Amino acid sequence: MTRDPKNPKVPVPAAGSGPALKHSPFGALSGLNAPPVVVSASSSAPAKVEPKPTSKPAAPAKVPARLVLRREKKGRGGKTVVVVAGLRAQAHLPESEIAALAQHLKQQLGCGGAVERVSGDTEIVVQGDQPARVAELLTERGFRVAGVTA
Image 1 (cartoon, rainbow, N blue to C red):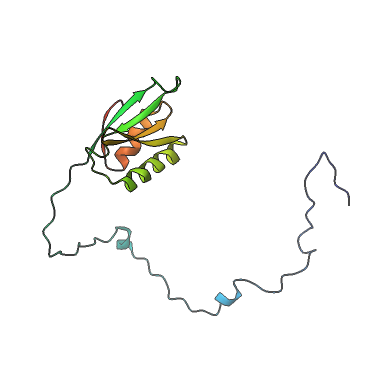
Image 2: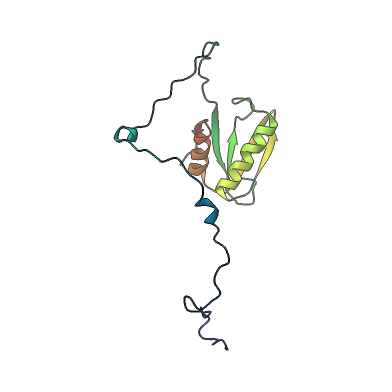
């Protein structure tokens, strides 16, 4: 049988004309006795789970750190970038978490970026003019965002 270059479809043999299977992958399951599943009308509502009592008093909720977004173009060859500032001063994040946050932003936005250390603070530089998406990703991670967000 030769293939027609205009019709790249592969011929399929008719049902029953090929060799039969030697075993059934689900054959071993037929001998197992599974317990019957009982569905009641009242089971449609999810069951309430009681929280476990803790011996420690609940810590006061932390206020999320405030990060400032800036749009910069000067000194970057005419390319626009979004700078996330306040990571060390406001959020008090260690370098490893800042690097992980920068990696997360770059992956989610599909762009390049870098971590820069500027006068005692650390900033994340994200390539491209997309401050709204950067702000959205940072708020999902629990930060308050100020500055350019549109």
